[in-house]
Length: 441
Image (tube, rainbow, N blue to C red; front, side, top):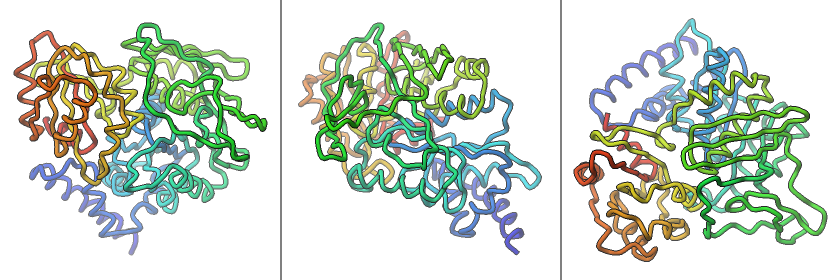
């Protein structure tokens, strides 16, 4: 009976997907999954038998989509047939969505790569236990949904505890991430040093203070951004030595990585921007090297890497070269803002729907001051466009350079007409604004 219901669910999912596409009432990343789980709550459990090999999961506050995208591309270059929630819909409905639309009765996937929301990781493991978990970082994010950082960390630890054989790949530079307990089945990655070849901007964004188990505040010998760096305590506690130690050189248009593991030294180039993407690449490479993927395969994958939906995504928008970068919390937004071309035409779209987080107070902690000397007008859009306009005024952007156009479609049309053919557009949207942008075709 369950097998019949499973196949019926697959059939219905295709019908629902066609209806969604025809009616254009949804982004299509979760709605099918929502309907599937309502009809058959155990659907995910039955999907496990369609994955013959390893299951890789990625969680953390920032970088999940890009990191899992890099891992997927490397595995595909290694000849693996994979299933992956590419567009970043990372709750159970999003994962059910991608499985329902990709599973075929006689098809098996070699591997699965699932990006998972921190709060849903434990629930995912109830249905589909994983072989690997990569944790990127933990920053303040959507406090209205998850509370403080220690709450988020506890949710991830609960998931880890459900998988006694889980292999962890942890960011050693993040003091919360480095403390996850896996019964010794963990490898660490981190940066020995970070060099900025062209952009020497030093962030003034606020950072979290973390306490050692002894109660003292952690100190730093090197801090790369926010609370990421080489931390230590006078009691003797310190950052674990990374198994995969990196040196990053960050250029305006690419990243160079030198990675050392035991007696092996690897050199990679990654066609992306920002220190945050250097961390994403380092984590993904560490995971794949640990899994046994060869250096040449990884190099080939990185050289052909296609940016993921809204994460330093390069697109053509109404004939203009456009860079789309998701922003959703203070640390991530501050790092993205460092990379913004101030000569481009800038559109910032802020929503406060459930998937974005209702609390937009994070706008005041993100370092929008870097935009105070932009060359062109900044268009602000979305449900909280006026909040964003006010934040830009306090950041030092002249009031006459701020234009409020609440409907996103109208804002996109306006900025397109204001942009010369040879000029570029930069769009900084929150998540649901990004989904709306994606409907542009």
